[in-house]
Length: 117
Image 1 (cartoon, rainbow, N blue to C red):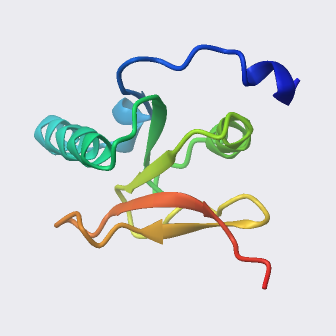
Image 2: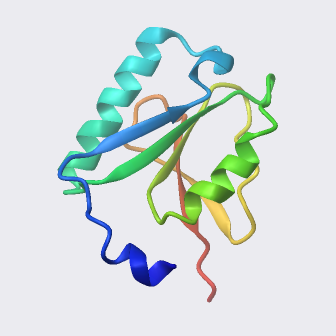
Image 3: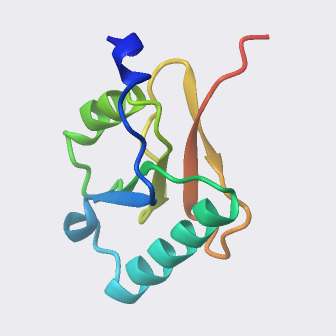
């Protein structure tokens, strides 16, 4: 199946799929500014393709988030998490959430593969 993905056309522009915005309790202006920052960051990095951001609030956890993250990592597309509460969601085995210090809120993370060394 991975072989066929090589022939799948890549999008000519970046898209960011957003999950859990409503249940997270994040303010609309915070969502808007974060999405704009994330889009600008992806463009500055030269990335054109699909990416995903999850709005996560540990005080109101969504049971489907863990399953969703596992599904998203199979696509080899960037996955981000915006921490609306005090803790980040537990990452899948072999991964970790890297805080993106470039964002002024210190609440946005990128899912990364752990180094096996």
